[in-house]
Image (cartoon, rainbow, N blue to C red):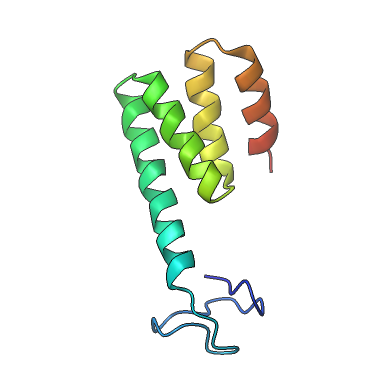
Length: 96
């Protein structure tokens, strides 16, 4: 994890906050974990071919953490839903 205050990478390995600046990172970790759970949900719903739920979870993950994986999963769900505007949006957001 990268500390948003000082930029130190792996700032919270021991769970006590950033070792460089002391920034409390519990809320950031909770947000990151929630985004990861939404990614897992998006993957699961894509496998079940429940495109609306997959899109919902991918969008929820993106709202929390702007990851290229969330954008790619949203792109796949949008493609399955034949939603051209969403496909284009997520295609551009998922590019690296």
